[in-house]
Image (cartoon, rainbow over all chains, first blue to last red; front, side, top):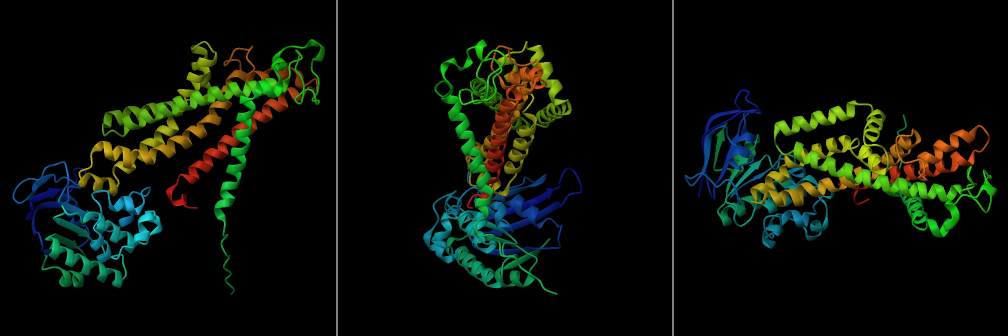
Length: 197
Length: 284
């Protein structure tokens, strides 16, 4: 499977475009990196790829065809701050099963404990919540994952655990991951190739 | 230099819940008194007894009697029952108006949002009491007029709160995630947006309720509300004004005090509910 951004452009409120004519391709089963200075539109591109935003110019294609605008999107986005990406009134058990029932093995690989399922998001730490957000997004139908600075706020041990689990999932499930980060050392370790925006 | 760290209280939640529980207890007692009014005060409580005119509080008449020898306690409870009924209806209609307008404003149409915002600003910009008097007067007074007047003047604040809440939740990352999972608009509205609105609506209703009661009493006191024959708190207070200078203090004190207690109780309950419905305070 191939995820492509073809001549994508985007501007907020008719101002100067954040993105203009950007091309990017992502293969399933491969981990690619995306870096660049702040304000270059890395996160915006990630949101466009995951259909959270619609491009003002260009197209996003999956296997050469425009994806359907409704229904399950095989491209999922993981945010930098997981607390904003979960409903504060839902317990973790409900959050992780929003798309489908979570995979037990994946739960263990991500280090998610059963007792977390009965807690509210504000009762977990940032690292724990990021694992929860990953588990929710890694459904059997997910083919691409846009990981936008997902470990930048975590301690090195948590970062290492999460990336080991993600690399493993990417290989086993043939999921393509776009790692958006400022951390060149991290990109050199996990990504097969890195694009600078 | 010595730096002292104070140990936080181990039961902070009880400090917050205490007044709410007390207020709830008093409100339940008042509601029970209203429901059991006939049994508590006797069926003859509202009947005139010219032999017992303007008697001060006694064991027979705990709140004293008025200028026609009617029991002030019986009339106060009857008045509160009427006020509660009007407050309940007016606050309920206000919440329905506020919810409908908030949904329209947050639906995505800029024109609809502008119209609702203009209506809100206009209603909030006009002096509250003047608007109430005008509407009640135009509708000819009476219970229905008071309910309509209070209902159509009390929605703006709640509309603003609900509109902001809908817009905030609709643009939240977790709603975008849910949309990406292929969830329908109905699912998002029911499971993500509505649970955020219901607590606001309940709190809005509970906070509007005492406000509506006060306005009903105020309107009636000024002569633009309920019919003079009805035992409303506003009428009781209005009638008491003529006798206060003559030292008949019980005619105004007890109805006024019970109205104040009822309003305060529901205000405290509303504020307590607002604190409790915050998910971050939910556990404590």
